[in-house]
Image (cartoon, rainbow, N blue to C red; front, side, top):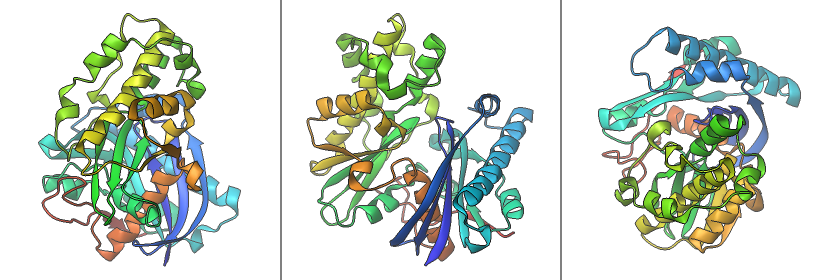
Length: 356
């Protein structure tokens, strides 16, 4: 077993998640402490300025420097707050920050300097975990399904595990352990963008703004006709593929309500692609902290819905844990992606190892 530290900075750009697990890349023996370190507003702006880039520039270099420095600081803070010496860590899984994801061009870019992180922390670091899959023709996302399967080993199946970050994705786990995974559609990103543009808020705290609004059903019905929802998996999205503009013209509260139900509807529509109906849905990620969104998911799916916390999982740390798990798999040459999770031509390993 390895003590693996996973690091995740998602498309919402809200902060850096740090989480420790003990694993061999096949089973999880134990969970260690976790920590979320929010990005400062000026750092968030620097990172967002690089979104959509496909070539290096001053903007991307500044963003990468900020991401790398932020991760170094986050790991050191985690070590100090939890009293765990970094010398006791075997491996770091470093996702980096996705700024552009265009698998149809066989292109994905997660900024973050893995070699610099390894030097600064004095630890082995695995990063670039999506690149091999995309280069082989896969979607490069989602990467977390194999970790979901490890967590769900003793749960009733079929099971759907939904992670709601900036983009939402689902892992369907069959009775026999079969996996199907794909991005369902927008997650928190359009809601966050709406709140920022229209209300000067970083996000809709506890879904309060959406709860005060009215859902515009005609717009929601049109949204549900988007061609992406009809596409057969595997499929994945860039953060910018779904925006908040379809709520334009609505009041602040009504727009938040309608966008929130849009995210829920996209999740519900994912079930049309499941080989068998899910016995229950498990909601993870930042979206699990939004009670209005959770109620919307219950309403539109008509299924049993629980949160990761209801199962004793740390929903906020789950993706970071997953990258510790994936780093352990990478080190052992085990596959990270599969034909039914990313559309890869065969089970593929990946990642790049940096020594301190």
